[in-house]
Amino acid sequence: MYTPASFREERLDVLHGLIDAHPLGALVRQSVDGLCADHLPFEIAAPTPDAPFGILRAHVARANPLWRTAGGNDECMVIFQGPHAYITPAWYAEKQRSGKEVPTFNYAVVHAHGPLRAIDDAAWLLGLVERLTARHEAGLATPWRVSDAPAGYIEKLLKAIVGIEIPLTRLTGKWKLGQNRTQEDQATMARELAHDSQPGAAQALGALIAANVTPAS
Image 1 (spheres, rainbow, N blue to C red):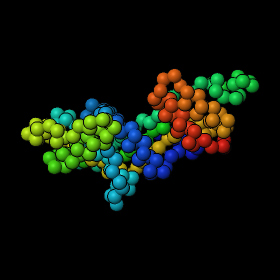
Image 2 (tube, rainbow, N blue to C red):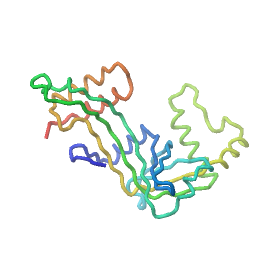
Image 3 (cartoon, rainbow, N blue to C red):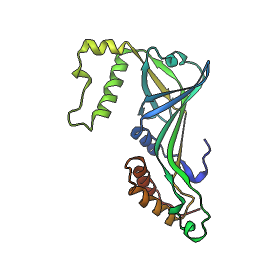
Image 4 (cartoon, rainbow, N blue to C red):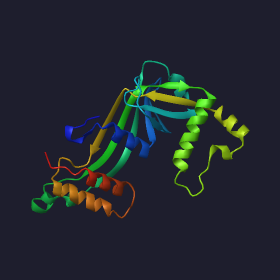
């Protein structure tokens, strides 16, 4: 990923924070048919001596050939997309002076790299499913729990999935937030995105820019 120095994000807690907030990752690997991508919700675990950038964990259907490719020396990559939005040149001061500006797109992304491991263990899978469920049900008025379903039903479903684990050997982040612009332009972008008529990614990006306003280099 092309990443100019001003857009580079290397703080591990910040990178993990984006993954935690946007857990649906695109796992890219080389298959017999060429490049292949699977879209999976991940959890990110703390670093270990063998995984200095943390560990990604998820599960796939047993019918998915992905897990059968695990165990080799090939590295896979998981892409996590954070907030993103179109940036109009109308928000730049130079547009008013000379018109010499063009649109762009601002965004925050993380690329996570490491070897793929398959884990076919019912207890491990149950623990993962329980953690993922608790994480994503936490904001609901009446959170659903795995134990709400019959034990035999859950046991049957666990046999239909396989766990995957990726000990991360490399983690790169790109926060393209207009750091190459003036403070005035950055502040304008943050303000305009915060008032975007379609709430969601644009407003989240505006908040991210506001928190990272820096002088132009």
